[in-house]
Amino acid sequence: MAAATEAKASPNQSPERVVQIRRCACVVKGGRRFSFAALVCVGDEAGRVGYGYGKGTEVPNAVEKATKQANRRLMSVSLQGTTIPHRVEGRFGASKVLLLPAAPGTGVIAGATVGAVVELAGIKDILTKSRGSNNPVNLVKATFDALSKLRSREDVARLRGVEV
Image (cartoon, rainbow, N blue to C red; front, side, top):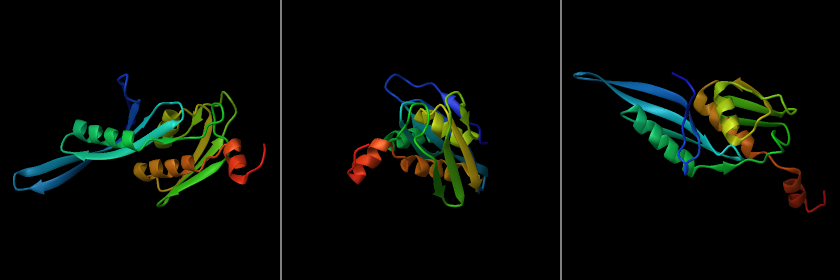
């Protein structure tokens, strides 16, 4: 059930992408009671991206909760043109994600989960490799860890107190 789908965004809302829908069954006297969990990423495709994880008794409820959480969790990403400034690795749990800058015209070379996050961040040219666990929740968190480690030349120069 790990289909990445694109949803239409209203004018005041960022584009969202449902990365995964999970179904859980609870066995009760009358049969099975299902609940759903949704992993959603949102972004403005210009350097801001966020993710959310919502649960509900129906799929739309879970997606709505996840989208709300993702909009509250937006973070800025340092970009250099259409790619990232430098190579970076992110980790979460047993998942590791390697992000490499790519030449213009390369496109997004990534799996469905990591690709959804980097596309919503506005990155057009990137090479990625995921190692370890391929759990979509951990992959998204590892990707966000990697994106949070990105620094531009100006940021590093300012932190060190030197001129570029």
